[in-house]
Image 1 (cartoon, rainbow, N blue to C red):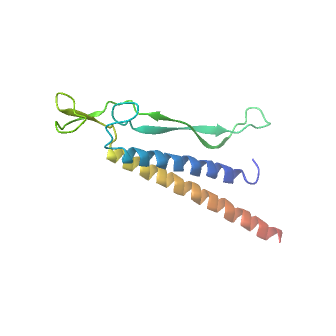
Image 2: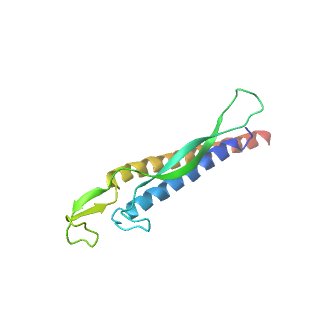
Image 3: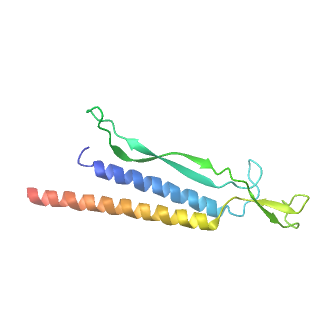
Length: 139
């Protein structure tokens, strides 16, 4: 790992957590969407993370080099049924299929993503201070 390796790792965490926050915001924004281009109600989306593995010259010595987003998948849990016979998308029995978005779950995920973002920013700041001290020693 080079001198800027810790910056790369923290930057990958900042990027991944920002994307996670975007997906959470999209889920919250579509919590009442009953029509999508694919048909049916909006389905909650989740971000799938994976470790970025570094290629090293020494066999058997692998180290994580941050995080990467593998993809964004739809939550396959069934939609919530709400009785509202006056809704334009109500079925014949009066129930409306609402998105499978739970506001509490989204708030908890948002808190976790926010804390992870802050932790990566703090790690980047610490690495920056450490490099600054190293430069001061060389003067």
